[in-house]
Length: 324
Length: 257
Ligand SMILES: Nc1ncnc2c1ncn2[C@@H]1O[C@H](COP(=O)(O)OP(=O)(O)OP(=O)(O)O)[C@@H](O)[C@H]1O
Ligand SMILES: [Mg+2]
Image (cartoon, rainbow over all chains, first blue to last red; front, side, top):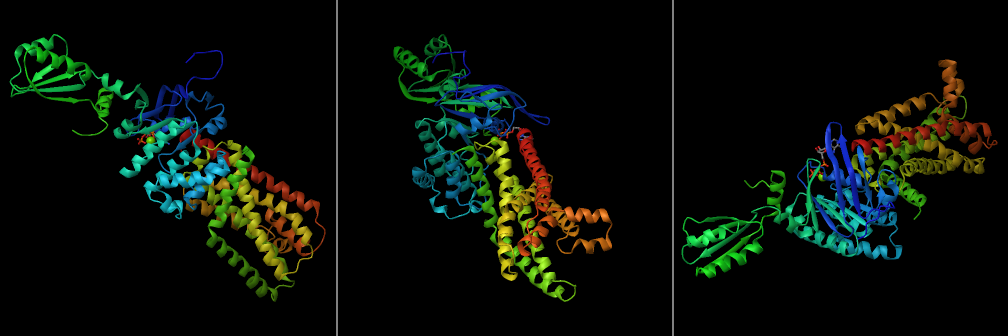
């Protein structure tokens, strides 16, 4: 990638510049500086009220920033809203459709608004409806669809549109487990076809399945942004390696390992060694070779990575999932 | 698709709601038609002139009015259902969305009153079909004006019932102070002169009068009447466009209407 300041073309698919949004007394976004690279799937993870929807609504020009601005494919959302809307599509958190239309005519309307080739349009719509299991509901009016069906239709709109920037706001809330998988796979497929994708969610599993990178949003602020493995590695002592021995752990082994760093504890029975380390993959060989050198026989090895929820807890001091 | 054809497509989709609530329009049509027949025939014996001929054009204009105020109901629903936010993500300028709504209101008015007009022509053979056709564009503009007023009321109605109250109040006042159901001479017997003038320049009166004289009566279409119709309709359409534009701007700032 080459950096050039001379012209206004940003290198990012999305870039926000000190973006703030305030509703009355609520600061929903605070001086957000955030970028998304072209062709990646960026997952925005945050609890209720963290500002995810506000951010996405600002990117798709429905909301006007209180201060700062954002660029989509280099186009300013405040100055050039209509052009921004040509290159992007959003599947809303709450499905919005014409109440008295059937799913296919809602999709047809959407396709025609975004100049989808009229020859291919019909097949594309039919296929997408089948992929998302909407085909059985094709004769129902939008207002008679269930919550999950309406959400699937919301996703279908964007799949038919294939915009350069596709935004999904909690695409699988209200959708059953099978449906979630289908939607996730279609989102991955869309990325393969060349779209840049932003997904907002508060579901760890969704983030794990989709993300190239994750942005943690909390209280309208960007807390951290990185790939999931890197985020997990960033938690010092986040990985746990548990080694079981056939005999009690030799004291010398413990002392030897302690000189290498890391925190170790021995189980009450004395035959289990538990290590809290940053990178399990570095520590497993160290621990096994040290044990081998001391003639201690290993019976089991168990590695536990931190979950994304642990990552969240680490960076915000608050859990996403309440499992206490 | 050009931005203009997108705009037309949006107007058409919105307008299609007019037909998707068929039962509503069916009831309105039958009410209007039975008004024509019952009132016209009953009063025929009581008043000194052919009241039926006087009343029918008025009913046609009433139909135009009801259909155009339906725009307000559609805007109100679109706000509640959140479809407005969907429209706001389409590659159309805000002014385009505003135009789409006003056009769709005009279409509703003209299609519905056109239907009534055809029914009326069966009952009263028209003397000036060509005049009726010439009047259609002006009736269309009148309908956009009424749609504009309806949009304005929708914009200031927090709940649907309130919109209904506004629409009814508008209807009663526009119909009472007009020459739709009785001639200006009758009004002047009971009410002061300024009110008679208001009644005569009421856009609904102008439209009913033009239909009465030119379409049913066969006298030449007067440019005065037609330009008056334009002069009262266009500002109303403007008010509506402004009101709708303000709604969209409010959503952009506050996140809700
Ligand atoms: N239209 C509005 N008017 C006033 N406050 C609002 C409005 N929309 C959102 N907020 C507030 O702004 C903050 C951010 O809301 P937002 O909807 O962006 O959160 P979110 O991360 O999408 O939450 P969720 O996971 O529940 O969808 C919240 O405190 C919310 O109460
Ligand atoms: Mg949200």
